[in-house]
Image 1 (cartoon, one colour):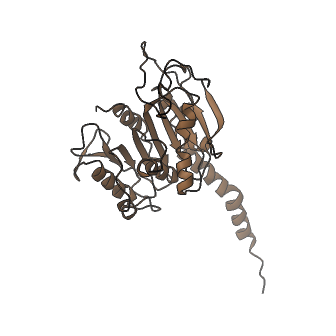
Image 2 (tube, one colour):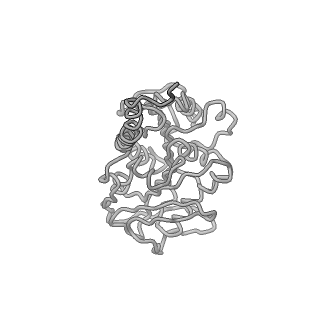
Image 3 (cartoon, one colour):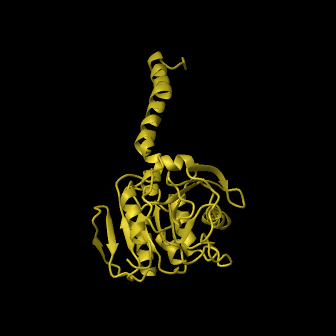
Length: 302
């Protein structure tokens, strides 16, 4: 018996291996990442009279960012580390002013590096042109210890850049969405964000029910309809957050087709659920809507 594959099968096999798979990989990368224009740092139209933050990240350090200039420079600063060595990079508005208290957006990655996460979410331009400092954090295996350490990133950034501690926001995808959520409800969390926008987070309703509600926190839950990795987790999460945020269980349409808003939340709290098309690996591409959500949650008055 001849065990040799027919010639045409061998040709087909190697064609798929050396042409088909790389071509699919290129297509997959191109369709799931943003082009370079969205990765550029934009200039921000700073107000003539800069506001001052009224509270601090660290209560032992009153007057944070008041009457002093932070030493970090404008632009892209890579290879930053938390105390345990977790890596992140920072990008500022291209015309960064070191005495102005900026809102901070921290982007938590799944099991990928922060630089690839930047290409995946494409938030740099829209964030910096709105005045945000944005940080991309490398992914880490999840544990209580690692999540708490990831929460150190805003504190590390505030040591070198001028940050408004009342305007700290989290987002992230998959494990990064889980981190964004956990840093709100974990008692061990070192910092409290003003609002979060987790995507494709891996916490279901049963797991949420074991958690104690945190203080009401504005949230934009994003979860794709065809996510087979965490099916239905987004709606379950949104329902739990709505309950914790003291909203009704009913919701109403918004100006964004993919999003609904839970009814009768407290006056300074929003609870949104946004469901897009695609599977688990696809970023929902609601960047403008996310920044507008954060901007609406810039203070205690909506």
